Length: 496
Image (tube, rainbow, N blue to C red; front, side, top):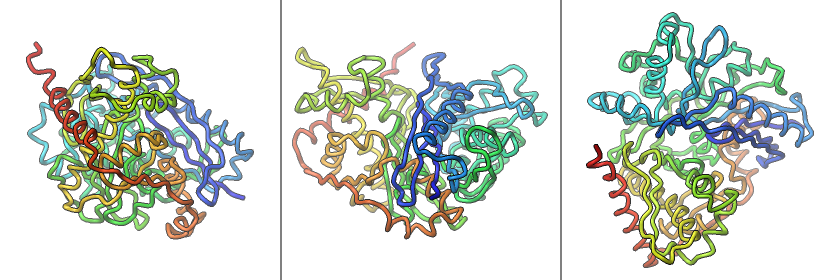
């Protein structure tokens, strides 16, 4: 029996998951890797840590599943998206650490070119922000000794994490990315379907650094290294959020999902027409089986599940992330405590890189449980802000919210989300839909599955959280949240 393997390279860990024909998980393995914080607002990874953790998880998962590379029909790859790696084409060595999507070091550079934002939006669907790859590449070229000269000579390659993995899996023969990842660089014209020369010039980036762009579901070549996957076909590539959208089978206009990962990402399929948001959401390319440009509106929240890691690592209120639910459930509510986790600024719909994290409403009787509860509620409140903006854009209010990602298994959080939104929250039986989407894309490309309709028939039943709207405490909590967000955004005012 053949299987599909997904490489799910995330912000804090690398995972490998083996899926069977029914779309259920056969085995999975996960390896965390080091987070590097050289300065305030800077976030980096060692690219070789990314590669090593991903490949060690492959070896582990194949062992757990009791299979070999020859038992795999294909490999799909999904990845943290805007994270930027630049490496030497001759040596294969990075010229600098990976600059992570959360990194804010280029905020001033982005502010200086705000006059170009409308042009950038019309070409890429994006707002000018340090979140995206373009300013990160420019920073490397401007600050790493010799990088500019090598880039101009065609000796450097840029890639998001998918490109870096594929380069290494194919022994440097394939320098590629797919359209969903390309659309996150702020350099790819998602209307004309090409690297945009005007945007490359705006950021001072040679086009020779850019990878070839392919579709998300197509055969792109075999693994040629001896890292446990030799001769396996690579056939699916997608940025993590577009992969999750496909994993939820949101393939029709109007379909939407929210992923609760390190950040939270709400995407709604809007079809083949390029549309710009009026509420500071972004427009992005999604996976297309028909090899045509298809789009989604997206609301990107920078700190979702990462707030739980903060409780664990910085406040040390819990020893393991899995303990947060029990701690939050130890109290009836947050008792007026509000936490705005703007540790790296605020994403959609505010796009404020200067917002600061804030916790307010503390009293003499405040307990760790109240802080944990406020942390969980902060995730749901941010999602509600994005849905409010998306409803205003589409003029078609959500009737339900499909959810996935690590935090979606938290029953307390999901019920609070349903109560807050006043619509059902629906979680699939396999909540790891980011990895599942990459598996679907790869499997469809090689004929492992014949169509999305076949996949839909094989899926297990969902879990539904029905809302209990109109609760006074939730309404009051939402109002307190709004006020706290404004304080968070104004915190830097008056600083010297």
